[in-house]
Amino acid sequence: MKELTCIVCPVGCRITVEEKDGELVITGNSCPRGYEHAKNEYTDPKRMLTTTVKVEGGVLPRIPVISTAEIPKRQLGDCLAQLYQLKVTAPVAYGDIIVKDILGTGVDIKASREMPAKAAV
Ligand code: SF4
Image 1: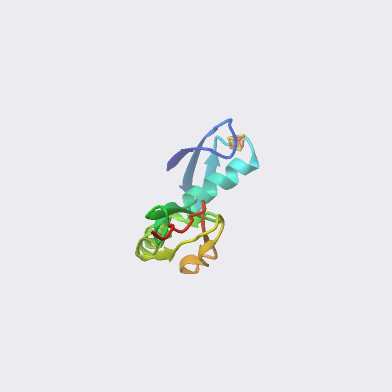
Image 2: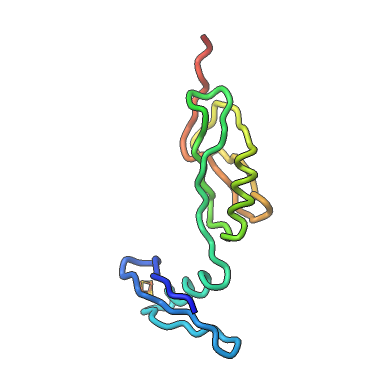
C-alpha cells in the first residue's frame, strides 16, 4: 500500500494505492487526473531532472540544466552520472540542447540559463 498527496492541482487529495488480487485499487482521488497521477506514481514514477554541468571558458564554472520532460525515477541516477562527466564549452544560449535523448529516454537536457564566454584577458 502506498499513500500519497496528489500534486496535480492545489486541492492536494490524499490518495491510497493498494494491490488486491493483482489489480490496483486507488481511493481518495476526487477526479480522474488524480487517479492517473496515483497509478503512474505507483507503477513508474517520473521526475523532472535539474542539475548543473561543467562549462569550460564561461563566466561561471557550471551551468544549470533541466530536462525537457519527466524522466523515469529509476533512471535519474544514471542520467545524473552521465551529466556529471560532461563538459560543455561557452558560450551557451538559454535553451541550448546539452544532451539529446539522454540514455534513450526520449527526453533532452537543455540549458536553463545562458552562459557567456569569459572575456579574454
Ligand atoms: S485528485 Fe483531482 S482534485 Fe484531487 S488533488 Fe488530484 S487533481 Fe486535484
